[in-house]
Amino acid sequence: MVTITIDDRDYQAQEGTSVLEAARSNDIPLPTLCYHPSLRPSGSCRLCAVEVPGRSSGRAVTMLACVLKVKSGLVVKTRGDAVNRARTRAFRNLLQMAPQAQNIIALAESYDIDPGPPSDGCVRCRLCVRVCKEIVGPAALKMEKRDGMNYVVPIEGLCIGCGTCANICPTDVIFVEDQDNVRIISIRNEVIGRHPLERCEGCGKQYATPKFLNHIHKRTSSHTEVKAHHNYCPTCAKLFSDRIKTFDDRTQR
Ligand code: SF4
Image (tube, rainbow, N blue to C red; front, side):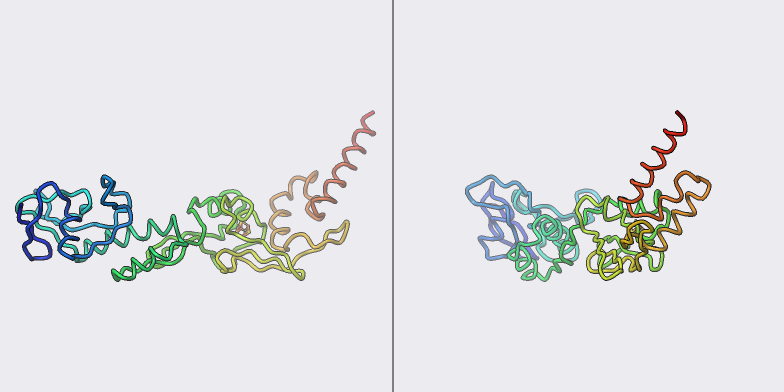
């Protein structure tokens, strides 16, 4: 047997056992999901972090109690700021992967850990932010830290309603909804842009926003062969360009 100190109290522990086993056999609670007494510990859930004094600097570090073996004179803490930070990180990582797992949320709350906001389905690839700024131009999206997490958020008034961000999103969390002559672009029920829709000069279908059409007209103003296409919905524009092509073919014969 060896003597170890947990939360300022001395305990006897069997040599070769882990800190997690020693804590549990003395009714000291530590959260864990990946521990099983019949299996070798893997440390994969990272919930059982405990604080130990650092070797050289004396600064406290956290280690996983399931893989940390007891040894004579070992001092650990199962509570405190460092442990809380490590646990919060571990719980939030787990809930990113399994946001539906109510048992993980309940376990976090039983240790006074804020499980954080529910997953919004966004993988933070920033494709939407980049395409809006680098290709489309308005730079209507940005990353913003809220409650310790980075979110894609709109910059008010800049969206032109093109829908490119929604098309490029790999997880389909940006929505384009055309209803009653209005286009709404949104993420997490947060409106990125709300725009009236213009009618196609060919078929009368409502198809694009005035801001988008202005933007495209400016971008294509020096290209006479393409600028008129944007007055038409994609179907009519295709017919229109086919007619020009046929006309050009005939005049060249
Ligand atoms: S719909 Fe708005 S936010 Fe999305 S790419 Fe177009 S301008 Fe940017």
